[in-house]
Image (cartoon, rainbow, N blue to C red; front, side, top):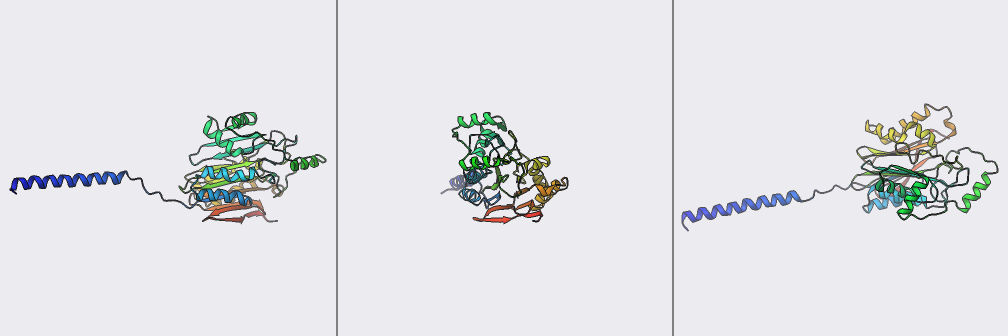
Length: 326
């Protein structure tokens, strides 16, 4: 081989090698980055063991945070023995069961429904409001009309046992919330999925024998539930009127933004309520919270409140610290 041919062949080989390396580099750059999967976490108010377990397992199987939360709270919405959530919930003073709920996802989008009379799974309906309408909240007949459009079943939410209890209540018609008794035990749930995204749902039938049209904190974004995916989330249960006055769930997330742990944030938010009330012995308020690291916390006025926590595939009931100990 003469010198001229050698130089040409060497140059061609070098160019081919260079192009090959460049092409390989381009291919490598186009590969999707490896996703660092997070350990899922689900927490909820009260000892709703099955609801939290269902949500936790759904997260383990790869379900996103919002759908897992809705799936979890649906367990209690459909539990006829639960007189404070969903079908079988205690009616208002007129004998009508009305349900409230809200959801909030990791993007900051949210939806809510209030005073719904004939739909059991109102948390799922709140998601429809969020995704399929230009609104955040729909009430009563408007919410129900939307539900039927999207295939929800019309049901009578007043069960025989709830009606019997209502007839008994009518004898005295005394309206007095009972601390840690199921007349205001909302289920609020916070979930963190394998992507590290946080979302939540909150659903209730409200205070037993409430005034017609009464709406508490549960469907109110910032009061009964709030999520900021950069920081964490919080949910509330108890006397809704007091929770709304302090926008409790929003406050907790903001306190975590300032560097407080979920536990510290729950305690500070609750102290904002107790500092302004001289009759805290007459009502219960409780908060749960979770931050972006998956750390959790809870705090309540009266002892007796607990939260469920699903972490590392283990579902645990955790007794909450309290401001007042019975």
